[in-house]
Image (tube, rainbow, N blue to C red):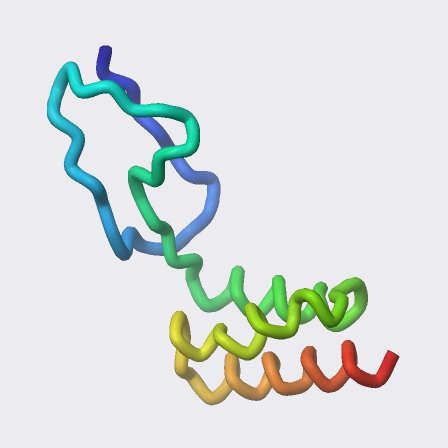
Length: 86
């Protein structure tokens, strides 16, 4: 049975697992990796500056692998600083 999946987020596909027709997949199997667009990343970083915890810091610090723009790196730094200051 073929099913179409749609994402409500803007972004791009970074990895796609080929699944042959009729091949079984399970609910824990990764089929596609989506990379959000810059606006979504920046919005998430801004939100994490208010509600993020130290558990979020590794992901915040790794965001430059997704988007290495100066704007994103600057926002990630500000977000991490805000979390550490609490």
